[in-house]
Length: 145
Image (tube, rainbow, N blue to C red; front, side, top):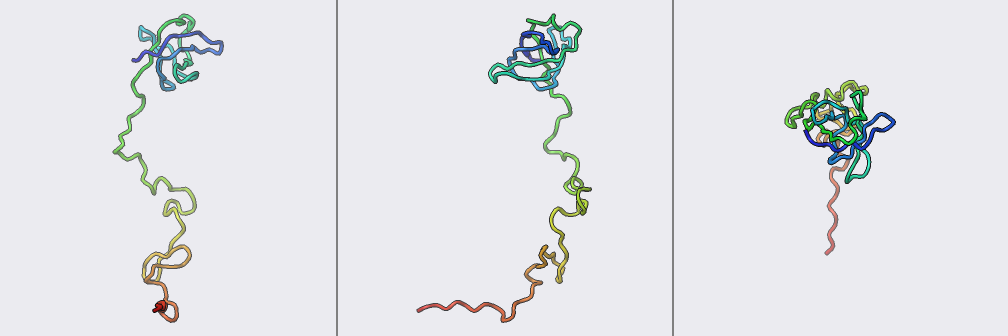
């Protein structure tokens, strides 16, 4: 538990307004000094140096908390993510079902060339499968001298 701050007032919209000592995460549970749950953090607003928090109360008489210190849970909720583990689907599965190729490839379609190598989308294959131009190589440039 970490001290959240002092309850400033109870707003007409149904929120407890708290002057914070630090910024909590949204939807964090808020407790009083007897560890009774008071409500949930719904909004953070105001200046960066000393922000305010709007707490949606879950108690019957929220006006009784005006002037009291409230606390917020510090544990991270939800499962922890291990950066070394896979996040589920691999690349092919992630793109499956999107578009006409259903995850087979993400670029232009490629067909095998004459020599078994893949051709580029414009029909040109690898260098081994291209035909040479008539006349063979270009002549060497003349050297002045």
